[in-house]
Length: 109
Image (cartoon, rainbow, N blue to C red; front, side):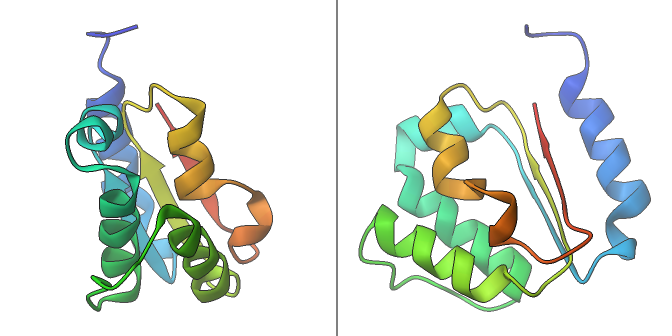
């Protein structure tokens, strides 16, 4: 359902509460970016924003999933995934609550 302000609202929430978390990431236009550049690219952006360092050496989406799980499982993370249009995108970026530490919040639009 486009055009009702989900991105604007989720960005406002992000700006309001991001400081309450160890790390945070707002990924905009997930569906479009995934189609243009692939999920590995989005995983790289997510890891770079959350960890504050470049992660350009992911060999595959599977490695990206493993890295996200391993690196973020003890962090209280705020992750907003905007405009997700396929289950595969969600599974590659935030597949399970146990990928993230206690108190983490994942918002998907």
